[in-house]
Length: 248
Ligand SMILES: [Zn+2]
Image 1 (tube, rainbow, N blue to C red):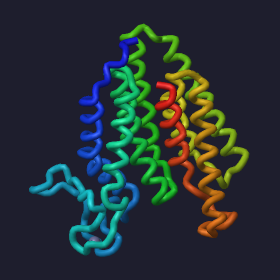
Image 2 (cartoon, rainbow, N blue to C red; image 1 turned 90 degrees about the vertical axis):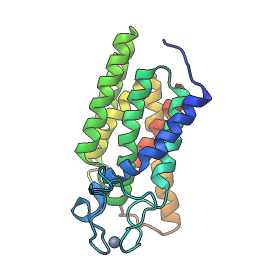
Image 3 (spheres, rainbow, N blue to C red; image 1 turned 90 degrees about the horizontal axis):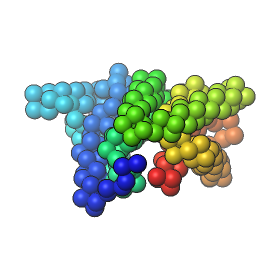
Image 4 (cartoon, rainbow, N blue to C red; image 1 turned 135 degrees about the vertical axis):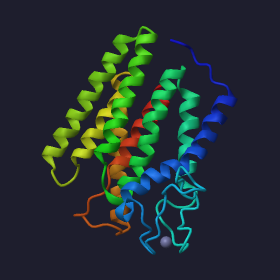
């Protein structure tokens, strides 16, 4: 173990990084939720595309189309606030540089996945698979450099077990969960399993509780019917994040 070397400065820097990365995450969200991956749904203006004055194609954190001023994508500042809070919390709880990089990696993908799933009920392979692969590589490097190969094996086994459990749920209730949830479970099983298989279990249970609680509230408010399907990704992500923060 490298020991925790967290200072208030590191946490503040991670939060600031989240605010700065927010618009870039917003651009990734646009790719999956806007018509053609980049057009304003109201006036068809191209959003998040590189221009001479904006070479990274960074969208405005205001969540509004610069041409027609209509709301587009996540609301004002929401991605930025979520990213700042998640990165700062992970920086406060994670020990060592490589684990922090590993969790920042999956958190960046996870934030995009959560917003995309809410908007279009999809967890694209192009996000879930690199999220898991990058985490596997960075945690693997952390394990090798700190002599924690056994801990890595537990994380890998947890990833397989969680993905297998979600695959079972998909096969049992084909309309509810989807293959995207299974692929997300690989990365989340790895992320929580690094802190032991019990963290994977608690994270998964918290995710299922959050999802069913959210569905119960919406049913009560008659915002959804019994046959509606809700996005499951945000609850899985929140449950896993909670398990990691409590265990770290
Ligand atoms: Zn517009």
